[in-house]
Length: 483
Image (tube, rainbow, N blue to C red; front, side):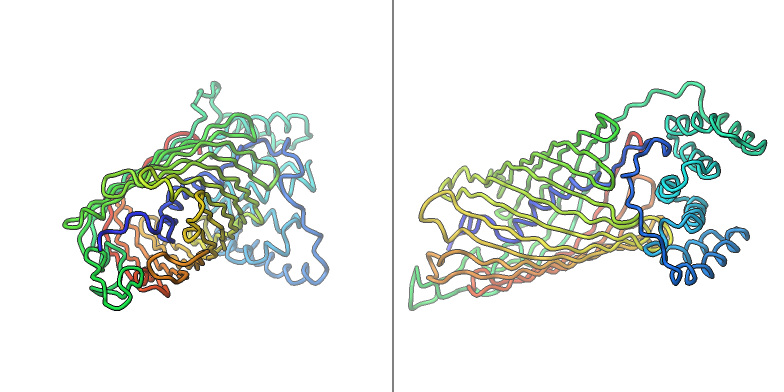
């Protein structure tokens, strides 16, 4: 048999390639438009119900211990005590004051602002809260927001010490705030060398019984059988976000990938992605609508392209937790095989949690997704399918330069009609396990060994296979513009 080129236009691993490009949409999903705390609407947080007497008693000992640790200069120890109580005590002024102080003193100013904002909702006249918020804005070089807070403080009755602190903060703000481009850019280039145990994604046999070709004798698979090879790849991205108003921004970018094998060049593949959209923040919610396009190359020839759109909703549950969901539509065309043109509708939901005592130290995420794909051409319903899957993953930063990342992914696919060669409807389940270590040896360069195991279990032998990939990547990354 000759190489498969179009009998399975949307297998799970092909869908993973599409998802790789769409990941870039989430790089700026936590983007916020900083405003004065005094002028922030009450909808920017959801005020918890007041803690009951039992909760207050349970937290009183912890708060007292945290207060003592802060007085001794042990902000990290205080934060370890306070964070587990955030869900039950957030909105209590004493707790939020201690939490914001501990976050600030451990270098987590942005998260501290979240707790300070809760305090200002319940007590907008709290001078100490305004001063700490102003200090954080100055440290983050958010001078416009700092000036807005200082202007509000001018209207209040201040003690001599508070007036002096206010003057000290004012002195740290440039008399002429330099005009900076509001656009934020981020990008990377990555090169990888590695080994692929199954570059064809084929079964580990030389021949199969294929009834549509010969119902009695085995048919040789030729180049479709499993084959291993060394590979090299190059990938990169360039992404931007540009604020239009305080709550609305334009976002977009491009990314690409291309690999090359030592022997099996017939399995070289690559893609280029383009996305452009708009996001809007309201309260704890962030919405974005994005247009998508991709060109996918197989053996240096355009194999498939798509255009489509995605609606994304992200909701901040707490300072360290987000939930997000998406709805996506894609329209596929196959230039050399127009009878395989198809459409796809997909949706998903995920939950992300920051763990640990400092922002970004540990991250846990998990989610579910599903979708349906249908053919445009009558009589090609064996290409239509429904799928459902899930993922769980996480990362942990051991030191500022060393971190580890891992993920498990599963997807079950059920097709609509019998395969034309096997007279049987294909059902397959794909498992993917990824792990990688990242070592940043400078601010812009990092080295990452990685491993992937893929198992595609199917009731038809031609689609039943497994694969191991081992790689070593060198990455150069950059960012430019406001945080």
